[in-house]
Image (cartoon, rainbow, N blue to C red):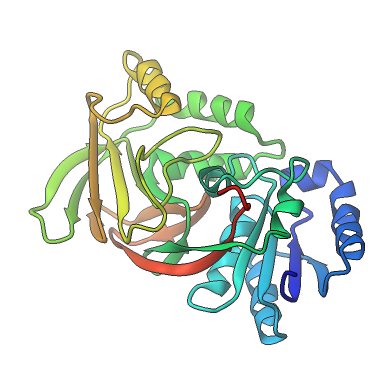
Length: 296
């Protein structure tokens, strides 16, 4: 039997907004399995974090995020370092962490997977003090996240259109990157991403080989993207073969310091926020308990 559970439902997540049956399905699932559980909807940004903290205070051992990567991030941020586990019903456009962990979508067994009552400890990333669980990024990555988040209709086709519309007008900055105690490197950075899992989502692998429980983060720099190499790089990313490509630098460490010429935006799990010119990114090893399917 799973512990006392709180389902946190984001009605503004793209999938949830298009599928109003999901809220009733959640209630029916609770009733069918006679769970000590309830479901509450979010009403505003960051509300999921408040609701998750309240759930812990009320004795919940499992707090389930029903939404996209942003909802997952808000709920998980409240659970870091606590005995409570994160449950995930991935309903977003990318679902990178869910895909990495083999967690199915809401119509493919995500609810049934919770009944296995099986958990795994994973690492948490922190970028300028903001938690992330899948990936954070700067440069083109953050620019696309900002534009994508402003769209009414999302999904992979919308992401591709947004990316292509910005691709050749974006001017990369130069970055100085310190990985652990190693000597710093200076490089142009079209994309600078630090990943906990191996992919952004939609099986687009920004950090092939990354693991969520190794106490390390994986940094990937795409220094140059242009009309000649954009398609080959995209093919490599979706094939999980980014390593060894020209214009790609890969680093692995428990801590990075990334410096750019001036303050700007970063994203953490797709949520865009302002950040200073120098950003510390570090790992909190095995700090989040997450529910996983019995097959994993």
